Length: 166
Image 1: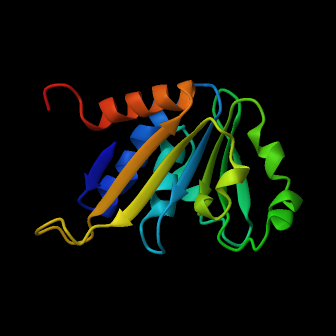
Image 2: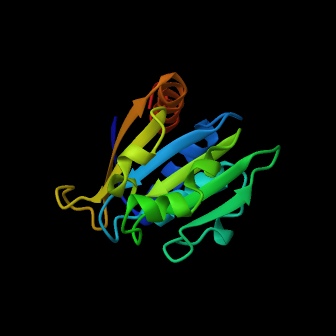
């Protein structure tokens, strides 16, 4: 799936729609992109879509991960692999414990340790677009699902972004 967002507000709103597309079960989301692509803004939108105050969600670069309770149970874990230098450092964070039942785990810079993520996952690439004519600050999102639950979430997300008849 590919989507273009014309502004930071649209990028955040896309995150909200993804968050609303996630059911009560857990999900791993690998979010990649260069500095300034809007990853944390998108993650704040996902949090909002899950019913979590987005203003509480900050970049976890220095903390590695922050966990937020989801209304109705489970957790939203917002993680960041940017500062991790090795697989051993990642393991020392307790990364495997993040995938508790009903946890939605969103990992910024997931491409630094893709092998650490579960096979069932949603993989997102977010980048600035210089090719969107007349749109300053546009972002392009590419999304790929691996596994049945991630595929179902991606289909709901696609429908939320592009409802029939729009």
